[in-house]
Amino acid sequence: MKLIACDEMPNREFAAQLAIELVTLDELLSRADVVTLHLPMNAQTSCVICGDSLARMKRGSLLVNTARGGLVNESDLESALHLVTLDDDYTLSRSSVRTLTV
Image: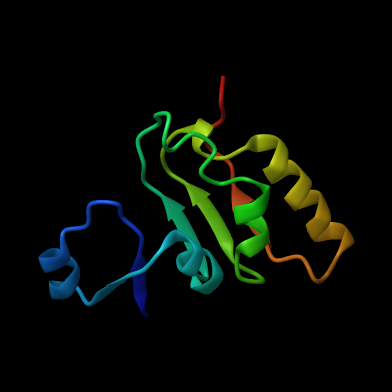
């Protein structure tokens, strides 16, 4: 298994010790089989996953938000999941929705 990660302030020594390749968010979305979110909710991270980022995700990939609901634009996610059933060419295969914005 190959690990890739995106972090604005990465611990490069830690990443090197675990053989984690540091990449941009765009590259991560296009390459990862599973995207997991581990972010605080703030002005910079609000809706970090939206329609554009969902469209850039690798075909058949999974999205798991382990953090705050506001990181994912829920309307865009709902649209993307509806497209999955309508269009075999759409990328996202499924999403784990455990945290929702209230």
